[in-house]
Length: 283
Image (tube, rainbow, N blue to C red; front, side, top):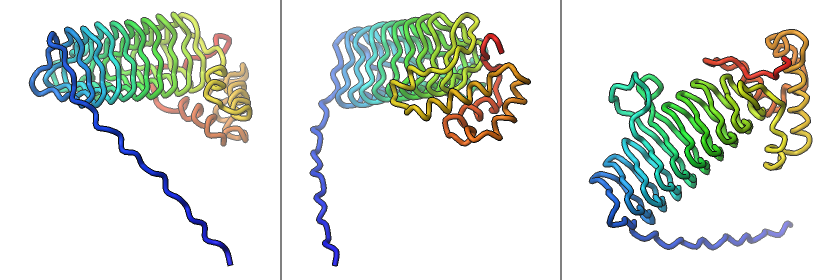
């Protein structure tokens, strides 16, 4: 007869309640704004009447937040950031639009983010744990994933899609309607005018595909087998034989096409898009 094991449940420690928000006397928080517990609104900030700040949000100083903008818990916003003002789109006619920013983000000096437009879904969204360095810009109707890093001066135009764990180097610009897949890397000063595959690395102006973001995958502890499968798929997809459409058909017959990471690249290429695909310069 087997012995019945007694499992000891962990003791849950209840976190102490967060203190009431602190608002500097020189700051303006308009009536109707929702400011969560533990928030700090620093000197000379302006928070609009429809803004929602989650718990523990910190606005260091001189931050302006307007419109229907919500910011997730513990996000920090540095001086002179401007979030939620009307989109820079001449077609915008004052329709109700929103900007949502996730939790645990860092938004550095001079960053600008615009809400959506009626023609683009009416929402701009930013995921959790993202970092936007000084003077980066997120335009209207963009969808930014989780754990994304925009270096200084990155400019992303309207309607772009940026996947999880993407890193964009300083001074890079992204054309409207472009897609950048999960785990991709964009080099500094690159000009992205076409879609960048997941796990891809795009360099130059105008940018070309320059291989896979192997350094990024290693940092996130992708194992050797996963990286080898992606490398094999990359060679098959971007060889000089036949057209890309023909190579897509050929790779479906390969064992590597069953790998979920490779599948992500194949599905990304097959998905409808407003832009062409960023290709190696020799392809």
